[in-house]
Structures are given as C-alpha cells and as structure tokens.
Length: 190
Image (cartoon, rainbow, N blue to C red; front, side):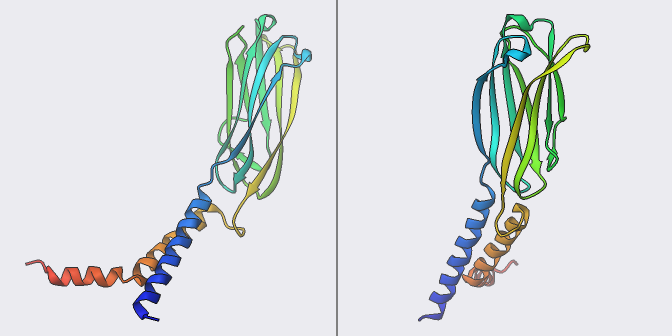
C-alpha cells in the first residue's frame, strides 16, 4: 500500500473521529412538554404548560419553564415558585414571586447545569399566596427527573479539546504542513 495513501487514510479517520466527538458534545437537551389544569387546591382556575428537561449532557445548560394562565379567581394573588435541585447548579434564582393577573400568562424559567452524572432528582413547587404574603398554600409538587449523559465519563469541554488535538494531528499527518512549507518556499518574502 502506498505510504502517502496510508497517511491520508489515517488523517481522514482522525478528522472524522474528531468531528464525531464535537457533534457528540453539541447534542441539545431533550425536553418534555406537559399541559395540565391548575389544581382545585389553588383556589382559582387556570392552565399550566411545563417544559421539563429529560436528557442533558453533563455540564451543559438546560432550562425548566413554566407558563401559567390564571382565571378570574386569581386576582389579588401571587404565584410563588421554587425549584429544589440539589445535584444541579442553578443559574437563576431558585425561588420566584410573580403577580397573577387574569388571562395574562406568567412565564417562569430556571437555567440549570447538572453537577453530577446519572439520574438527577428535584422538585418543582408552586404556591399561591395573597398579596400581603399572609397565607400561602402549595398547589403543585412536581418531581423532576433528569438523566445526565456523558461520553466515557468525560465532560464536554475535555471532549472538545481532544477533538481539536485530533484535528490538528489529522492536518499534520495528511501532509498539510508539507504543502504549506512548499508554498512558503516557492514564494519567499523579499
């Protein structure tokens, strides 16, 4: 087998492996959307839409979103929401307070980065309280489970660096360095 052909074959294999590593680390989170009515224990009617991450790459950011549209009985009340997630770093406040307005959706979002691999468990709590803060009652306690993936135990940043090194060596072994050297020698600066 020709030596140049073998070098180029190795270079192509290294480049494809490096690009596969990069693609693996760029996988977006997988989300699940849940629509449900507000529980009667809240004291008002309404609809909720929850967007919950299901599968996330280790040390990659994901978001948990809640949209709540309240009915007529919600006037003069506040929505208090709390996300308890001990195995993830929250990039936004863990607890949020928002006024409820009839037929005006309330949007809440938490950014989280998993700090551990495997199955992470947390809880999303929704409370309704009066505007003076005197009475507060929970109307939703939702367990949140997120599966955190990785590749051979490495975080995405390490895989990206390994891919960059692989692309560099692929370029070297393909003869790119020799081609650049020949071009520079043919056109020396004067």
